[in-house]
View (tube, rainbow, N blue to C red):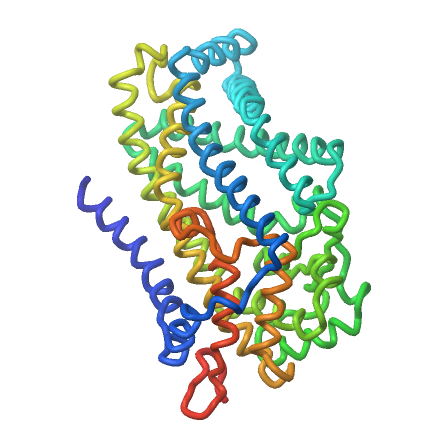
Length: 438
């Protein structure tokens, strides 16, 4: 690796490491609450029957997660060993001489084949959601969403793959860097456009002000206290109950597309005070610049991933390319090798990604609890009760396996969040809030 590449990677790393380190800084009051939370095993509990279901659901989800990732890697190895990507390439080249045509035909066939191979696991996943009462979406609607997702994936992937192979032809040795630039541009466009163009294809949204003006008035108190700019026309109500029974809220977009979304299931199950706490948490993601930090984090991961991925791809082609009937890295069939490599890298990077995610989710928990101080009577109990409802509604296991939790969960466990909420009270004598001055 030459000096310029090393400097680029180091600069990119510190661009993420500095804001991330600040997000991970723990105040003495916060550290004290975290220690107390570790000893509290009763902040989130389930009655025996629900506990039994929650543990069974945890086992099913864990199996689906890891079997799915293993199968995603294994199926690519098998397809390559059987020469299937090379046959798909030959078919695409026979159908058209146009590079654009070959690209979209190959990508369509490749995505369709892998989608069909993944159908049994996806069917079982939806069956599990229906069986445990977490989903009410009928199979027809579920298949329609699956079809829409496939078409979107094909269009976006087709464009990116066309750019990828153009870059490979122009810069065979450094395509990993030059392809990273349009990829990040696509990510930025995706984050910006998704709430406007993509999300409405799958769910119905309406202004929260139109549905529940009293709730908007309550939430505006939190906005005013935070100092974040989020007018009522950026607050949305999503009709999730036509598909799921679980509770959720989220922030999405940036700039003109920035918005905060509350699911109707959450509004129906939570009290106004609890909704203020949920809102405060989501507002914290904007106030603490988590979307920007997440984009920077993704940029570094993609940059390193593409660099390592190129080296691994070269090694695989040198060793197995002839056996797989792949002519070079400029061969459409090489896409299967690249996807295989990136899937392997993503599996091993998953704990790092989720550790970062848990850190910003915890920071948003702290922010949200401080944001509702003085707006609700008891922020500690209100937040804890909110997590209790969330956990019961989603059948979250109060004691998930630590390794599974560490590897695959992007949020702190519900039990730890509820216990921290009860213990964290920076407004008492001798304590200090992290984000708001007393």
